[in-house]
Length: 179
Image 1 (cartoon, one colour):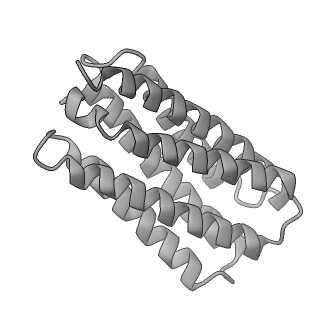
Image 2 (spheres, rainbow, N blue to C red):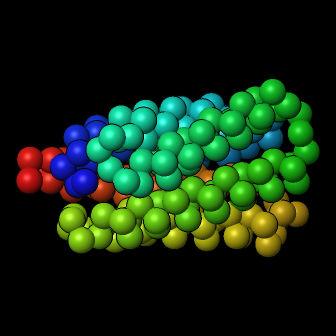
C-alpha cells in the first residue's frame, strides 16, 4: 500500500505549498474583510479537495483506505462550493463551517496516518497535522464570538504549520515510493 500511496507524494507537496501560501496571504493582510477571508477559504477548500480527491481516486485499486481520502476531498470541495455560493454568510456560520471542516479533516488525517504507520517512517507528521486540524476546529467551535482578527491570525498560523507538515510528509513519502 505504501508504494502505491507514495507515488502521489507530489499531490501532498502541492497541497502543502498551497496551504503555506494561503497562510502567508492571511498573515500579510489580517485586516481583510470577512467576505474576502471567506472567499479565500472557499477557494482553498476547493483546491485542497481536488488534490485529495485525485489522490483517493488514483488509489482506488491500490490501497484499501482510498475512500477516506476521497471522502475528505469531496467534503472539502463541497464546503468550498457552499462558502463561495454564499460569501455573505455571517461570521458565526462561517466559523462553524470552517470548524466542522477542520475537525473532519483532522480525523481523516489521523486515520490515514494510523493506516500507514507500519509502512512509513515519520507517519506522526501526518497524525500531527490531523491533530492540529482537529484542535483548530474545536477552538473555533468553542469560541465562535472571538474577534475576526484573532481567528484570522489563528488560521494563518495553522495554514503555515499544516502546509509545512504536509510538505515534510510528502518528502517522507517520496523517499518510500521505490520501496
